[in-house]
Image (cartoon, rainbow, N blue to C red; front, side, top):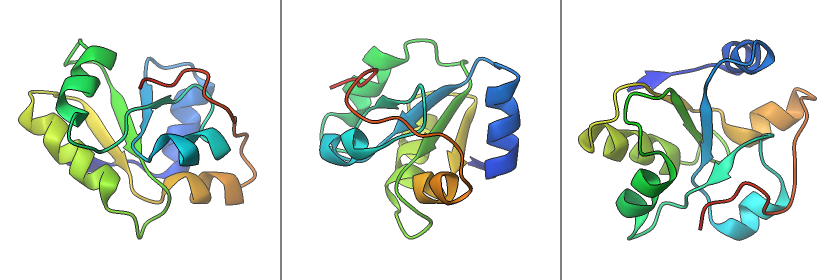
Length: 115
């Protein structure tokens, strides 16, 4: 599993690189705030099915994240995606609190969510 740091992720997004952002928290946490453009695919019993529906191209760059460095859901999601054959998955270990504390923009609501 590859880890991506906040500044590298910001650079990729600023340069409009083709990256899918996936928040793996429950919908109520996603709705509170999330990284702009992110989709919500919660880590639950249907994660494998839902992630393949949301991102059918397994070679597409994907960044998974959760709440903070203490949250293990995103590292588990990255591992499960690798098991499914995804080849370009990054884990943003510091999570959305790191992004928000840096003063970077966030979005709220369920637009872009995959449930």
